[in-house]
Image (cartoon, rainbow, N blue to C red; front, side, top):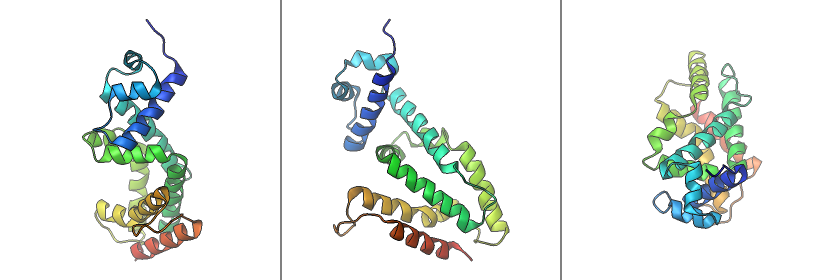
Length: 196
């Protein structure tokens, strides 16, 4: 039986993410991946039992990395503005350090893997965020609202700016580079919009 080669396995994961980001889930296959890695398809099956196993393995590993990034220096007892600032900083740092993985997550969210992906990680983060939200609402810093409303106001602007930055242009096709000034000005407007 052939043994696992750790560096080859990392290459497989990296190329798989790149292919899924470039061609979408529908355009991704084990044959294309093997060709991109310059290995035989049989070699892929040393590491993963099938395409789904590969995708979920990458999702789980990336999800753990993302979850760890989200809780770094996050204090659920912090004030609303301080806690949200840490979340913005952590999320933006993750997007800058792992742009392909972040785009891969976008692919997962709009695929049949979404439910399995989201159920598999963020448990510690969800507990910390739940405590944070309970605290800021109890202190009267923000109104109680549906989670989806909160997330849309609190984080959608950050993700839109990050996408513009990644693409290098705004919606009108004008060149765009995200600066700290723009990032934190937008953050200030988000905080102003959510605070009582």
